[in-house]
Amino acid sequence: MSDAEVTYDDVVAARELLADVALRTPLLHSHVLSAAIGGPVHLKCENLQRSGSFKVRGAYVRIAGLTEEERGRGVVAASAGNHAQGVALGSGLVGARATVYMPEGAPLPKVAATRSYGAEVVFAGHTVDVALARAKEHAERTGAVFIHPFDHPDVIAGQGTIGLEILEQLPEVGTIVMSLGGGGLTAGVALAVKSLRPGVRIVGVQAERAAAYPASLAAGQPVMVQPASTMADGIAVGRPGELPFELIHYLVDSVVTVTESDISRALVLCLERAKQVVEPAGVAGVAAILAQPQVFEPPVVAVLSGGNIDPLLLAKVLRHGLAAAGRYLTLRVPLPDRPGALAVLLTELAGLGANVLDIVHERLGVHLGEVEVQLQLETKGPAHSDEVLASLRKEGYRLIFG
Image (cartoon, rainbow, N blue to C red):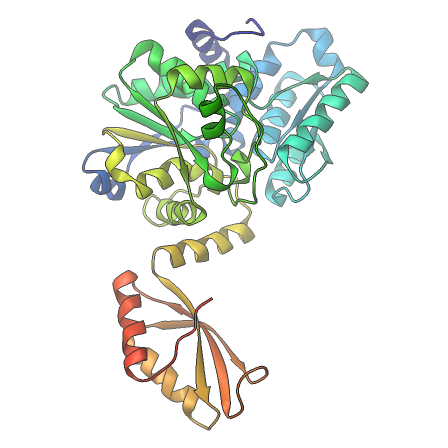
């Protein structure tokens, strides 16, 4: 392939190359999302792919195309985790040595998995962009071949094979929505799908706190933004890739953003209703459907792009998602400092059907003659939460949030 372009034929060639490497991941119907938009919604489960994400597709195509001399020099990459695992797995399959630069604070399961595939992990900076710069320096210093996570024709062609599978699994698809970071996945899927079905809408979704594409599309060229901290670390890229940007500019119908609450709600839905473990970056498409169901023309396919999530982060995100869905309340309640006051409050909550998950009884820093109780409550949903709060206020309790 040319270093300056990628074509539909390249995607077809990549598919042949991946035949015995990448899994043909399932397409699952989602009843709850279908009800939300008033038409069929399916989930493309790349979270079930080898190495836990779509990244192995592009990484393997890139590495398999290296000459024997290039493989002998080894490869180097930078990633928050999924590309790292894809490169480590792909390198192992062809017998090449791999070094991967990862940001400080990268999820521990992703670090462990990358090492388990045989790659050396080096930590650099706190963002993917810093790690990218260090990886490029390593390549110049050692002669190792740099495997870019999204800005290379081979990588884009490999990711584009997902689009071919979707068209075969659901020929009548009307909209495909997926996470958008540097752009390799969205560009590849758009190229593959639009080449065969130009009428299919392609939607890329970015985390609101790390969205480089809206500004870049407005400027007509890739521009740098400073990503804020986001749970969707895998798509927190400060500057779009040159080649993905060109394809996305011409082929993608829209780019939308989602909030942290949108992402956590989507993760809870995938786990609870679809029985799919998905990482925050991988669930952005579902988050967009939940946030704006009216804008997606069915049948819709949402790509679950990765499932590599730290169990500790999963626990935190689930709590966040339950709160966003109105099923988890955190509040403080001042009480008179006398025996039985707390018991009365807890009896009231029990009668309302609210489950107390955690309670802290605080005497310091409050008014004389008062104590403050910090509560974490599980409810049955927004309506039940409103009922609990209204009943407590009716009984004379003062509620403090935040």
